[in-house]
Amino acid sequence: MAKRSFIQTLGLLDSDTFDSGASRTLTEQTYNDLRTDIVEGRLLPGSKLRIEHLRQRYQVGAGTLREALTRLVSDALVTAEGQRGFRVSPIAMDDLEDLVRLRVHIETHALRESIRRGDAAWRTQLRSVYEELSGVEQPLSVANRAKWEALNVRFHEALLAGRNSPWEKKVLRMLARHGERYRCYAMELPDHTRDVHAEHSEIFELAMAGQDARAALALEAHICATPYLLLKALREGRIVFPGNDLVEGGVTTPTVASAPSLSTVAT
Image (cartoon, rainbow, N blue to C red; front, side, top):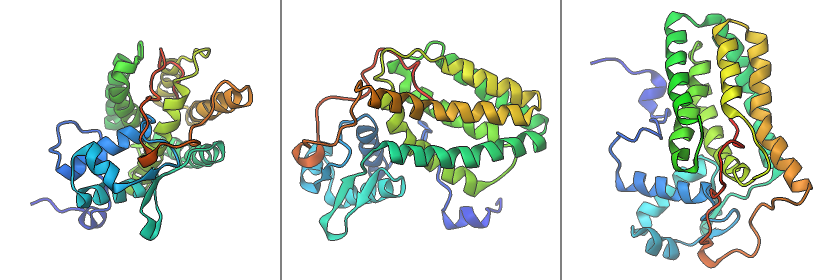
């Protein structure tokens, strides 16, 4: 039997959340359903998550819901309020800017190290993931958003895989999950045309060429594009983050991911 690392033995490394072939327990399925509804805006930011309402919506028991909600707390998508239960984490530009600063700090340094240390196997794997991602973002569409999100995360992880850091991967995966909510809101900006594939291609080509400094700068610009677009739209009054006039139980009918194109989505 192959030995596992200390971290893996403790169960601190997540399995790939986006692996559709993995078997799903009831708690896992409930977690995924809740997460999707939070990310896509069906459960509003700041809304109270009442167990009795959620039991009817998801057709599962209170214990299963609490387990799933506890996992979402670790993803920073849900806030625990002690004896008062749970609430969908609010969204705000300050939160997004803090998230982006942390991503830039970690990912740009990690990318430079990965390029310097990466071997032929790393470059082969990076090319494979890049080509798979390219197949779903030319063009992007709402219909393939979930698949794109999964491949997008894999691409960013592949960029950094030249250096092996399990904790780094764990932290960045959590940040990616939280940032997905903001990408969904960016989809609602109809007057912005952004070629995300071109950004990915630039980062990929620079990484493959061993140009670590330029690749890091391109990655930083790529990560910062979403907050720039959203901040500009907020200042111009073209978008408003939800969270007021919340529906009882935190459930709302409209979905956020209703934009005509995903070309405005970042990272």
